[in-house]
Length: 203
Image (cartoon, rainbow, N blue to C red; front, side, top):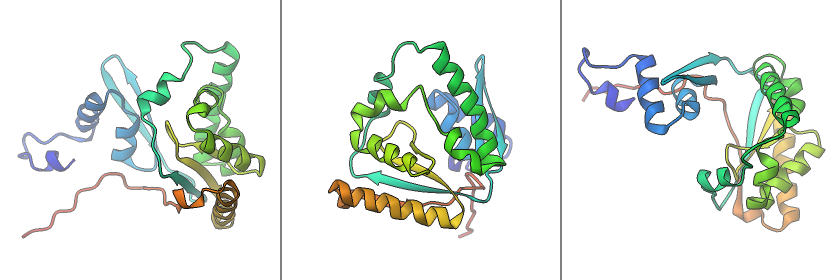
C-alpha cells in the first residue's frame, strides 16, 4: 500500500489490482484480502484472478488471544495435514464455514458450534500440545476457542464485554494451572474495521 502510494497517479493501482498483486506475491488471497479491507473478508481464487467480499463483523464480537512465547512455521503445520479427508469431515467443515460467516456477521451466539473444526486442529495438535489443550478446556467451558491460523496462538471469539472478561480470566487460570503462565501473553483485541489505510503527513 505504501509503495503504491508512491507511484504517479497514472501508474497507481486501484484496490482490485492491489489485491491481485499482493495475493500473487503471497500465493493466496486469505491474509491480503483481510489486511486490505478490514472486518470480515471472504476471498477466493478463480483461474488466476483473486477476489474478495467484505462483511461487517457483529459489534459484540471481541477476540481474546493467548499468544505463546514460541512459534510454529506455517509449512510445518501444513505438513501435518493428511493428503485426503473423509466426505463426512469435508461436509461438516463446509457447513461450519457457512455458519461461521453468519455467526460473525449476524448471530454471534452461534460462534461455539460455528468454530467446530474437523480438518485441521486435530492433526496439528501434536505440534502444539499446550495450545490444543487450552482450546479443549476453553470450549468445554463454553467459549468459542480455536487455534488461530496455523497456530500456536489460541483465539477466543467472545460475545460482549462480559464474556471477553470471562475468557481472559479463564485463560489466565488455565495457564496458571499449567505452570507456564509467564511464557504466554493474554490480549484483548479489537476487530480492525478499516483495513490498510494511508496517512499522508506533509513535511
